[in-house]
Length: 428
Figure 1 (cartoon, rainbow, N blue to C red):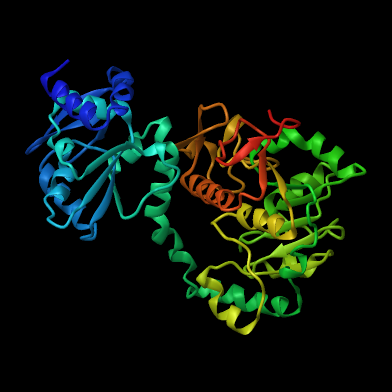
Figure 2: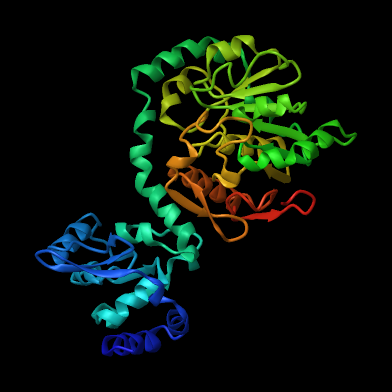
């Protein structure tokens, strides 16, 4: 045990006694760590530099400058301690919460360098994953967003989603020519179609299935067919990309939800749609609307893209979180469901597939391009993409905000969804 680790461990044991055994149990020896030198030096772990190799202090000052001068600040990731020291130099800072994103990495740093910030009474130290939600305002150290371990992965996903929010929303500001053209084309349909609010409270207490297009859906075709044909049929709501695969399996859903301007008649063909209601947002393809044989219902999300149309045409709102799964689930809740079972809500690429019923790459990036991971229902890493992780975060937040509804998941091969229980009749 190094002298620096003894000193750091003593401070942690005195201030956060419950944390010290956890840190001692971390396997820092498993990390591939190297010294990287430039004008200065830093540590590289698994090929990821923790800080600048030229001027760590100047880098920390730039990072700190992005945070407001407020009494309480949160830092995610411990780095080499540079950002903590810079922030603690602020005279107005009353509390600095430092959230560990990789326990083994933090232990390694404690073995190599003394961390004087641990002694400052304004510091609170905790594992990021011990909390369910991110805290604001924050700075997340970029290297540790890559190196975050399994325990802290959920918080990592929320941090990345929050960091990317402004960038991701840039295409939906409501002022792009392409969106304006689509809105104008759909407005005649919005004027004549039924407000989605007519569906609200129409199915109080009815067992409801919300079906997405994750690869695990293919494991449940037979069960869904039996349920759809049963005497006590549950309410079946699917997302747009799941409609055709289900139709091919002889499974007729009650409602299909669509929000994306890229969804066409290829995904929602008119043939066989007479028994299914279409719930859409006003970016839908007019050709889909024109051909649809069943009832049509229209609503909005809170997106600014619909701001002007909302002023002209009053329609009710469904929850939006970036994916069609969010308004589909919200529709189920608003219709009166108190038990919702999710099928194909994988938010990942399990079973070496991207989607059920579609070829690799048909609905987005190919499997080989997946560079990120999320934990599945068995606690193992499964490939995914960044937007899927953001969609998962938003669904988990929605579930947390609706404790009156019981949510069930049906496959351990997809992402673990916080707030859901495993459905004993379907889980695989």
